[in-house]
Length: 435
Ligand code: HAM
Image (cartoon, rainbow, N blue to C red; front, side, top):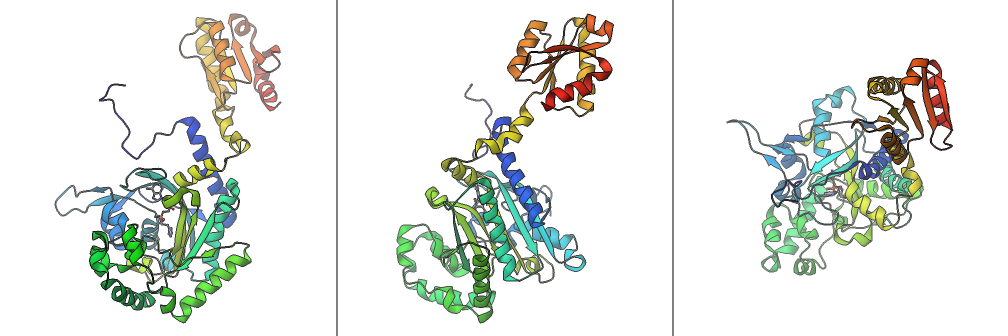
């Protein structure tokens, strides 16, 4: 390839038909489960006003601070736009803009699609990646928190995962709980601030919670003995968390209650959770989610509780490959869609238009995988092509067949060949394909 040949942008991938089979399988698994849980699909734009994300995810979150793909304003006084780095902010914006808070406050939604983050590309991390997410608006019942975790876990179970995956849960409390905790954290961190990394120093005032999940080793060591939010929780937050845990257990799950799960986005209240495949190391999260009872109000709607999750397909696919998934038979229906069913062969030049018409009629009648030669190959070469394509049947038209009103039908499995009257051809072909 010439050195100046075009390349897809760093951190993005082309997905060719064979590779798309795996993605389609994940999507179909997600859609099926959404039907079982009775969640309905929404689609929001791939880009939004930048301020929606700044406001929702938090200015000091890594996603907003370092990872947004932003398009500057095109005209004076215009707004900058950013490709969506996640789906929750857009869902909340759509919920408000669509009038849901007054017309139908309770909504169970799901979405599937690309997200964009300007991260350093590495195993499991891309600049364009796919998420399957759910967002439920309008109820604060901890049963719902447990339901969304159950939903995410069922997704992985349906893919064939067993006990390799860990579900880690925590509570971020309510805003008032966090005000008390923030003061305690700042008090604790102030002694060691000079010895911490520049990110920590910068975040100390605005968002000291982020110092908890700093990945720099010297900072992690300085976190030993840090006050826990658990000690600051109001009774309602504690009761919510306990009810959530009890419901999850009643649903048959064994979550790890892990106070170090703080998530990187600012909108969370109370329940947060992640699903990990531990062998993936620092990037082991396949899914993240939680409750965000303040977000709808933050983006201009009436106060509305909400909870959701997003599953990343990239990490899911890596984890699947490592545990020997997907099982080949699960991909068969998708592989079949790529399979040629019927190959239409023209004997002579004058048969090319009639064979194109036959192919068109078969397609119109609902026959799948109908193909023909477009490169003026000889009959012999067309038949070779038909065999190579794995077609189950060949439909052949020559001058003799046309003169007598027949089409020649060859069963490629048995090699049996019959001349079929045109009017019977479709049912005969359908019978053959059913065998
Ligand atoms: P998140 O934890 O930022 O949460 O992302 C969810 C999942 O998306 C991650 O666990 C990871 O598998 C995948 N992911 C994130 N960034 C990348 C990347 N650069 N490349 C590949 N995969 C990635 C959210 O996005 C929240 N909106 C989840 C949520 C929904 N919370 C409530 N509702």
